[in-house]
Amino acid sequence: MRLKRIKPVGETAVYHCLSRIVGGQMLLDDLGKEKLVQLLWPLARFCGVEVLTYCMMSNHFHLLVRIPPPTELSEDALLEKLTSFYGPQGVWTVMAQESLQQQGKIDATIRASVEARQGDVSAFMKEFKQSFSRWYNERNDRFGTLWAERFTSLLVEDSPTSVQTLAAYIDLNPVRAGLVSDPKDYRHCGYAAALVGNSRIQQGLMSFLEPEDWPAAAAAYRRLLFVTAGSANASDKQVLDPDTIRAELARGGELGGGQVLRLRIRHFSDGVILGSREFVDQQFIRFRDRFSPKRKDGARPIRGVPLPGISVLRDLRVDAIG
Image 1 (cartoon, one colour):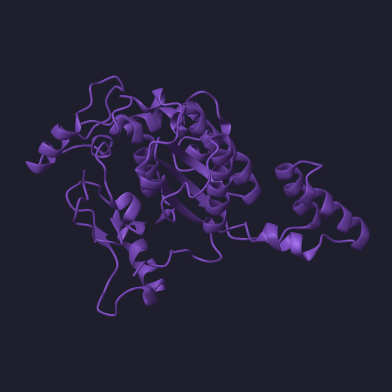
Image 2: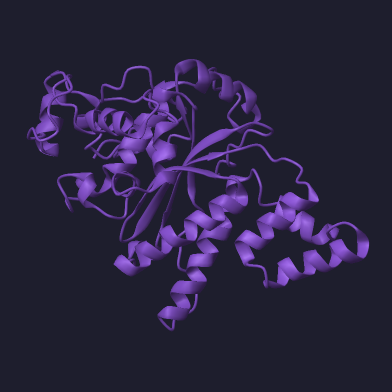
C-alpha cells in the first residue's frame, strides 16, 4: 500500500521533490529543461515557495523547496499575486478586479483557488507539472500523460546539515550521470544558475550556508561539493570515481561528503523523512497512524555511507547505494 504523503500542517517545511518522465524516456532536451526553469520562478513566487536549488535532467527533475504555512491574503496581496502571475489583462486578474469594484472584495471562488495553492507542496507540484505538460504536448504535437507517476517527496529537516547535504546531492546529479565533472558546467542546475548571477538561487543557497554574503557562501558551498578524503581541498583537485569511492567505503576508508554524494543514494528520494535522529523520530510520532503498529521507532541510519548526523525514516536495503 502506498504511503500517504507526509505533510506537516501549519508550519514551514522543506521538501526534496522528484518526478520522472513516463517510461524513463529521455524527452527533455535543452529547450525543455530551460522551459521547466522558466515555469518554476513565476509559479514559486505565486505560491510563496522558496526554491533552494534544482536540477533538470533528460528524464526527470529535482527540486529542493521550502514551503511556508498557508496565510490569509489581503485583497491587495491577492490581486497583486494574480496580476504578477496572469498579467494585468489575464482572465482571473480582470475577474478579481471587477468583483473588487462591484462587491468591495474579491470573489470567494477566485480567493479559494489562489489560497489552495499556498503552503501546499502537492498543489505547487501539480500546477508545475501540468503547466509543463501542456507546453510540451503542444510543442511536440503530442497528447497523453508525460509524467510517470505521482511525484516523490522527501520531508527534510530545515537544518544546515540536512538541507546542504540534499542541495549538494541535487546539484551533483549531472556529475553522477557522467555529463560533466563539475556542476558549474551544467547550466540546468541551481548551482550553475547561482554562479552566473541568479539572485533567487543565491538567496536559496545562502539560507542554509553560514556566510551572509554570496561570494563567501559560494566558496563554502563549493568546498562542500568538492570535499575530498575528509578535508576541504582545492576545488580543482581530482575527485574519485564512483567505483573507487565504493571500494574505499567497503574497506572502511574515510571519505568526505562531497565524495560520498557522487554515489546514487536512494534514501535521498525514497527515505520519506530525512534529518537528525531526533527530527525523524519526532515526525514518526506525529504521523504514527501511517505506519505499522509493530514499528517501535522512526529513525534509521543510511547504511553503507558515512553521513554523520543524518537519519531517514525508511530503511532501504535493495539497490540503496548505486
